[in-house]
Figure 1: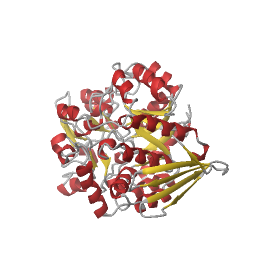
Figure 2 (figure 1 turned 30 degrees about the horizontal axis):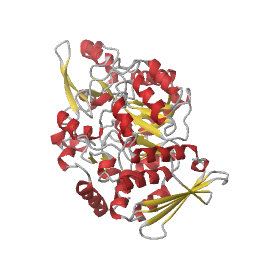
Figure 3 (figure 1 turned 135 degrees about the horizontal axis):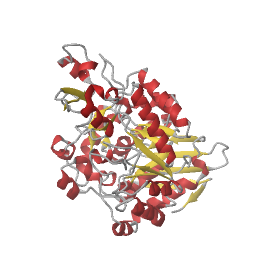
Figure 4 (figure 1 turned 30 degrees about the vertical axis):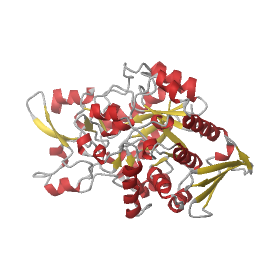
Length: 480
């Protein structure tokens, strides 16, 4: 199925029900009109990071189901799969073959061997300092081979995730085979996880290295286009990098919106939100929440440092059960530039604020993505957080079928589903159409969307101080 201009749900295979079969049942019973696409977070056999250390892309983890369940879901919803182009599990067949056979392995060039990457007597402390990393040590791991040798390989994110050398022929073949396999099972869109780390180059910071990164993306796109698959490169960094990606005609993420939205709702002021909406491209997916934390770095220079500090501190003040320690090393936080919380709890679990945030997201340029916890206006899961000591698990609650049936009866969830259904049906949200944003006062914002032919229009008038909003369709007030 090709991508549709309809809201996309982000979910794990075992978060809305315990497996893919139950997920499909939940979708049909509760969300079939509110959601048009599903980002199925990694469902392959994995050895860590909640699926992001994949062992084998050719099979579905048996705990979740089979390819048949994935394909059945793809019959009704366009699907996005994750491809961790930067790394693979150390338990993968490829890396295990390398460990067993060392220099005799035909997969040896898939991995970045530190003694071959750096000249003799390097890396120096200066080399390590230069590397763009989200942890306070060198991203290397010592490996013991079957022949008794030891050497270090590159691993950006963790012990389970061994980085790939995407410049080598054997890795390129792996990439081609993975894309082909995903296409065979109904994938419409591939999310290129951590792609900005994939190019390593001596005497650079090894992050988003130009022009090499564009060569990699273009190679992957040429392969994906054979199967009518689109790419969504994933990157949490300065918004200018997102704009560069958009200039190359890729879909991008609006990862700046979550913090800008919180600032607007906490302060009641519309100026920065309006400024951002006016410059955002249409070929994007908007987010307020994902399986990770709420990104701070993504909004830098769109909000001033003072505004970022205000928003971060207000989140801890207003948010329900949000503590700074949950985003620290004490809770295994991988990224110091993210705050761990559900979006509903970040807004103090206030229904009016939450619905206003979602309706503003719906009217923003692009296609809205909504994380499964957000779809159910989920609260911070302190029990799961404390059981696992994993900060991001505060926003990774496991819902069973019975709990979902109860949650969808809450007024805030009912209204949200109605808003998403409205977004999916209205032609005015045409991605080839237009958007006009005005701020009649410090606290009010008006957003009008029109289709390309200008025959349909919808308008949102919102007061960020009172948290009230009205929607008009072709100048007639639309009631929910």
